[in-house]
Image 1 (tube, rainbow, N blue to C red):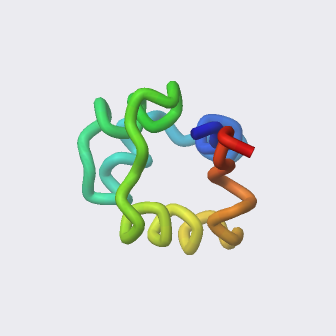
Image 2 (image 1 turned 90 degrees about the horizontal axis):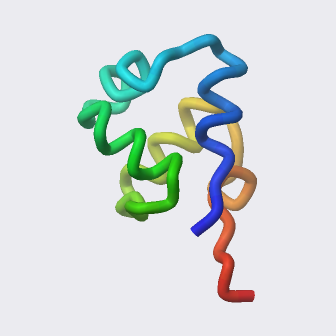
Length: 65
């Protein structure tokens, strides 16, 4: 799954640790999502979308298409 999480996070000048604290996950989880090694759960994806004021589809993109 491709995503824009790193781009959105850096635009806010947040570290991975900052974002992890806001989302209630570990910094390693944020890193794994950004690098495509981990796909977030649906509740976490919705939380990310709400945080950045975007639709899930604007942040996460299915690469199987």
